[in-house]
Image 1 (cartoon, rainbow, N blue to C red):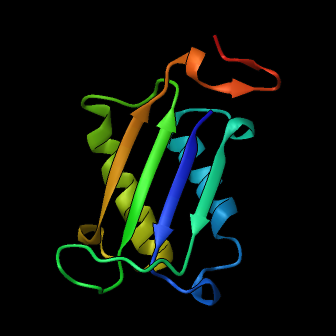
Image 2: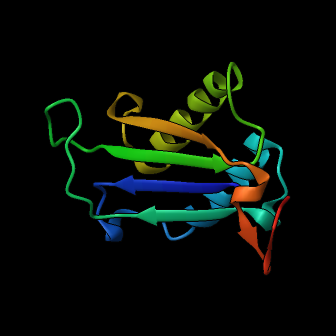
Length: 115
């Protein structure tokens, strides 16, 4: 059930047309999850500041049942940083990545939960 939420100051017109599909493949591989369960949400045109500046920045959230936490997040953070930077041009020091490990019973899908 990974959900990859990316909020960016980047204008919608400047986002590559295939970005969400690339992001879906990327996060599925990074977390070792089937892409068929991945949701990607890109929210462009955000009015944001980071570190007291309105230079291009982002806010990233990764929700997952397992596959995140502890030392794993260092690797995930590095890979996500490189991905966002290479695809959207946002420097890796211009956003935080927040990891949320969701309990199976706290994620609904197809009329039930993953519990």
